[in-house]
Amino acid sequence: MPIIVPIVAGATLFAAPALIPAPKNNQKKDGASNGNDELIAENDINEKEGGQRNFGDDYKQQELYYASDEYKETLEPYEKSSSGNNVNSDNAARAKKLTEEVKEQNRKRLSKYNQRRQGGVLRYPLESLTEHTDYLQIDIEKYVPIGSGYASAPGEANRYVTGNYFTTNRAGRRSASKLSTKPLINAGTILLPIPASLQDTNNVRYDSSNLNGLAAAGVELAESGMKAIDFTKPVQQQADALRDAAGGFKGRVVDGVGSPSAAKDIIIKSLASAAVNQFGANTNFNQLLARSTGEILNPNMELLFGGPTLRNFRFQFKFTPRNEKEAEQVRLIIRAFKRNMAPQAQGGQLNSGNWFLKTPNVFKLRYRTGRNDHPFLNKFKQCFLSDVQTTYTADGVYSTYDDGTPVSMTLDLSFKEIQPIYDIDYDARPGTQAVGY
Image 1 (cartoon, rainbow, N blue to C red):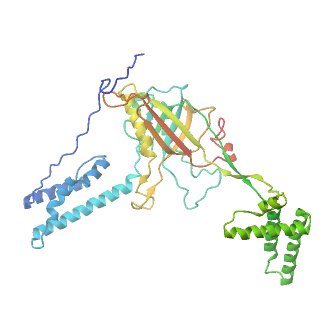
Image 2 (cartoon, rainbow, N blue to C red; image 1 turned 45 degrees about the horizontal axis):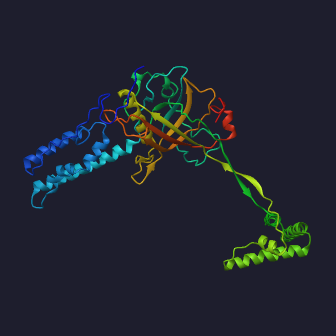
Image 3 (tube, helix red, strand yellow; image 1 turned 120 degrees about the vertical axis):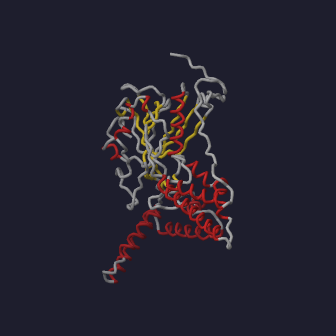
């Protein structure tokens, strides 16, 4: 195996990629009538070709051009019109129409921008995978909202995007020559080696709760009183039910504190603490009891279930590209994570405007062995990518190849699952496989 020696900035290891030349301005700027006619004719031709200039798929370059001084100078002859010159007025009207058509074209393009899909497979390292190779597969999928129901039952799969069979389950069969050479947009698969630090943590939230005897008796009194009020029954029957509820409350209090005088003392201290707190004091009747008698009411503390939690996963990958092809894969992998975790501008489900943002794409993570899912390691629910951190000086020194590619980089990714884990998730695929979630 040949030895690869990192070269400090400026050294040559493989050729640098060719630069894309900036578009040139070949349009005339003079205000003469003939020049204007030629410019209008040229604009008409370009409009038929889909825009004032042919930028191909480089939408960002097109957007920058429309906002540039160069484009404004193109329209300047039309805007310099006078009320006494019919030719200039006509040119100004045509220029205004052209501007409106360009804006409408941009609006339509932006409304469809987030619907673009450009899939493929990216892999690092570049070598082909074998049936004994373990790796982490990350599929990029479009986010699917819950819809009009607003809530989904535990374990439902209505939020789970399955993806395409050929781009997910067969991605490991791609040879190096068939890997993508273009950015992944709203689709695609990334194959990375198993990280050095591998773990999963399942958590459930529990909260402590206090409910002393007096409060518990008060809750029972309130519940009994509400049940006693029934307008379908006679008034006397309702009054008897309320009297019975009050008697039950009195009996509970007396039994709990031991005597009517003790009960009266507790109630007085409770009301007194509430009264003095209105003047800025910070006390409660338990503190008053402790000061006067050295006793407190038993808080009946108990740990109660507080709800599920969402799991977080953090991975770190180190990239040391060894040739031009591998450097291209590393660049596209970093770009794919950054682009597909970013909020999507405009193009909403309801043709919404620029006040709205769409949810970023989701990521489906799987540990794989060859062409199959890993037989032991944990499974994932679909995740959002919440954090991407790229370090371009992984070895502590700035060093690049001839084309500017850093010799060593680290990529830190933080994923967060969209849904919590429930027990029934272990009774259906993929929770039934290996150790489950």
